[in-house]
Image (cartoon, rainbow, N blue to C red; front, side, top):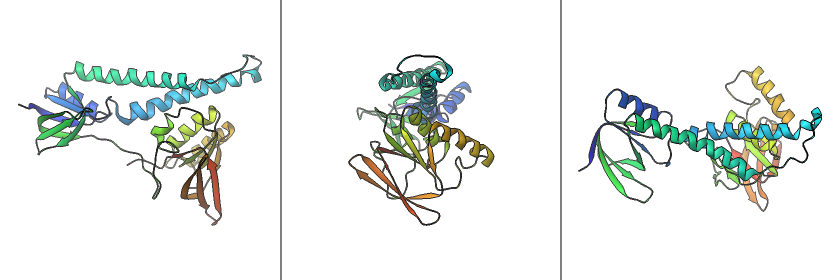
Amino acid sequence: MSEKFKVVVIGGGPGGYVCAIRLAQLGLKTACIESRGSLGGTCLNVGCIPSKSLLNLSEEFNKVQNLSSKGIEVGEVKLNLEKMMKSKDKAVTILTKGVEFLLKKNKVTYYKGTGSFKSQNEIIIKDDQNKETTIEAEKTVIATGSLPVSLPGIEIDEKVILSSTGALKLDKVPKKMVVVGGGYIGLEMGSVWSRLGAEVQVVEYLDHITPGMDKEISSEFMKILKKQGIKFNMQNKVEAIQNNKSGAVVLTVDKDGNKNKFECNVVLISVGRK
């Protein structure tokens, strides 16, 4: 016989797990279903937290590299990217386990798997072993979050053409990276890999970065990023991305109709989420 709940929340991200905890605190028998295998959603797993961790670690690496200019000799500074990624992953694991503890503390039943509706009040949960569990819910909250958006005709493969998720998991520093999109997500990742040694080019359709931000602030922000070595190509529309032996070529056209091409090892597509 399937277990019955007052409310089932599908999605264990910042919207879903907080909702589930509050419902349980208000006395409702609650379950939370998450397909990723760990709670916290995009933010904790492949978004805000790991990106901020890499921003911090890459900044520390950059600082040590430049200590000699301040009279502090430290010898040759080497990057161990594998250890850096493990440090990032450890920070993520601590926080996701913390969220799992909060669900347990507040008596929320946590199901690891993908939820789908069998009927209006019945939900089938399929785990990573394809084992199915059916539960019943008087009410259901859908909090399934967002996914990265690509450009028309361009497929993200997470090998050469990356989303922010792939950019957080590179196993080596690319010699050249093109970031398509001048929003904060792409610029964060561009900044990380620039500090770690990549030559980074940003291609942006608008005439300024960080759309929605005050233009004076975005202008000052661009100056800071340029000092890091990041190059900007504004008012460029991406027409195609072609794979080649070394990675890819990004083909663009600027506001005057001039065609440009940018060769790189990896392309980060950072044009929003849906």
